[in-house]
Length: 484
Image (tube, rainbow, N blue to C red; front, side, top):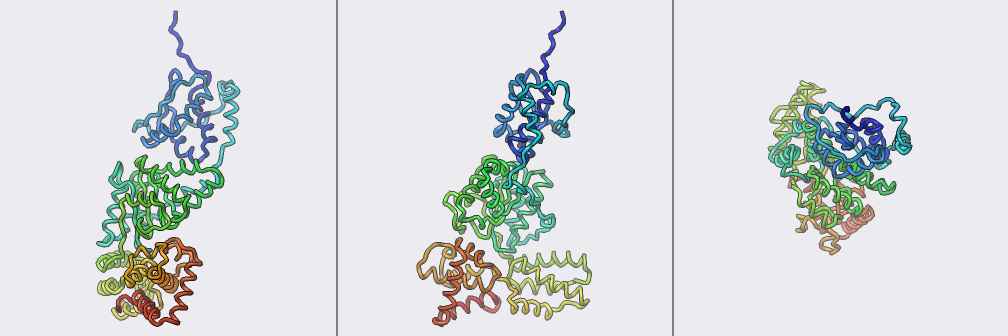
């Protein structure tokens, strides 16, 4: 009497796995399928117990907790032999094992039960991700904005080191990082550096979004009833990077979804990095629970660089430019002059450096202290010294002896409202920001409120010489800080 033969299912398990993949591609949509199902590989099956492998523990854990029931239903729908499913992490030496290739149709496949064949046919059509998900992963970090190219000085060293720490593998003590600072202070550079390092050194999936992108795609998902796909697509990232968070403040539904996203990443022990133009305590239009959650992050300010940091930046940039254009040499004394006399953001500082270096390169003449002084003076006289709204708010609040938060508050008391109107007037006059943009930075007010404030201050200046003197003084402080 011979040995009993091991029971072999009518359809090979490798073919059934192909059918499962096809079915889930239809059910999930291509985006979620590519993120979570495609990386899985068929490993073995015995007596109906199927074993799949994932290339990384993160994928194994997420699929087990979120998609195992769907996988089991798909296996059960394609084979009556199916008993259970186990997902393991692939061994290091078997990582080259990829998802099974589509094989030619076999005799066994032609003999599948009718329901299995129908599912396979439906599978061939596939499903394209809805409009809310298209392009979600398109933004790639700027390769020129790495940690190596970031100039570190006393004013930004803390933020720089925190950005490096958040990228570290494992459960770093920094899981939620919030960086804030004025325009041109280096926030976006640090976000790019974090994304580059996470992708290149740790092979992490980084989702890099502007806050407006998050808002636009979430609202599109609401309209197309794809919020579940949107949520799962977001949670497919190892690290979530959000720039300019202030642009979704006041949007109740969007900011609520953002909170859910942050909490989900925290629960999964993944990293979230956020940048905004002000700290969480000054972000108007946020509910208390969202503000509390953000204040629980590691919150770090990128300060306007001091003279020492400005000189470090100028020397590094000048050396870089001189390598490409040898005639664009600037003496150290000129760099020190610029660093000491221009108390501005790094972006504005480097614009003066480029101007002087270009002069040296094109004329072949050395840049003297007199030429540098002329460039600095011309810049201020031409209004090229771009004052930021944050600086206007800070100086105005200091002048009128107000808490800076009053610039964003809803209080209408005259002692608060009038200085806020003056700040809006100066913001319109001294910056290139639009009325809606100015309104956003004053507590999410609309453009008509800003326009009314500007017109009111203009009228009062004609009747009130004291107010006229106050406005002139503040303008002079902001445009010519060295002369006060």
